[in-house]
Image 1 (cartoon, rainbow, N blue to C red):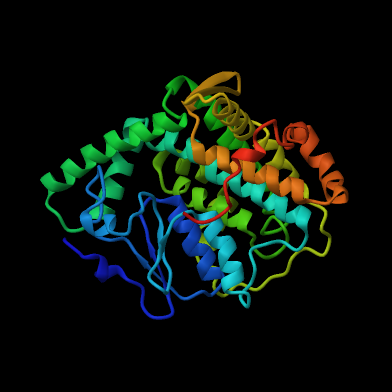
Image 2 (cartoon, rainbow, N blue to C red):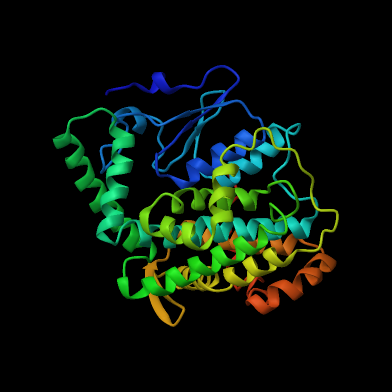
Length: 364
């Protein structure tokens, strides 16, 4: 199928999400816009990706990543976190994703980054390693991209896509099978925390979702589908599995923030989990970038992961530091009992030269 850029332009007064069938960030944005009742259309452009790269029709938007969110004025943007923050200003009347207090908003962003940056490593390690996972995930996603094509055409797409995604897996640090038991351990710990937490309340900051909940949902939406992580979720975390199905469309949900702003046990445990692989990856990436090095290595569960020191990951870490610096002294001290045991307290201050490398927090 061949389409032109004009075929995908948004309808008047609406956004269009150009999505990938297996893209956690695409599902994150759609779920958030559904909850906020922001008019939008969801489109996986059939034929827009052949397994190795974008078609000319999708390339015309000038964006390499998914989702591409087309604004009502026709402009095209990437990066789910700044987009969702900007939606708060553009659509102030809908239910907000930002918790009420500055300290809560910082914790929400920390958990969202934990999901967006670290759970992506775990997802890619599961998705592109075992024969069963690779066979299902590659075929499922390329069938979603190509639609009604013959088997030889689909097979070519599957082969290209597998090679491409295994390269991405290696690039972000999930390529060494000897580390996968440690990554699975982090995934199981996450499921255990979420499963127990859902017996107390439905979301991290009360009975309504925050940007952190949607960050977790984006990754869980795919972990609930892919063979190995889905099997583990169904065996160990049925509440979490059902929560993931439910959060997909909260357009009719009503709920309030918790009356007590103090973080509950689930949030404290998530920050502690983030103090494992996520924090190790962020520190190693930032330290490598500070030395001008392209690669980094870090310890998770007693094993060493090696990855590229991704510039965007470094930016996320510096944005967190900037957000922490903007808190009042009282808010920072209130967070200390949560952040210090997890290992964050002493590393959230800017290191020499880091503030100068801080890029604007803005959509791409």
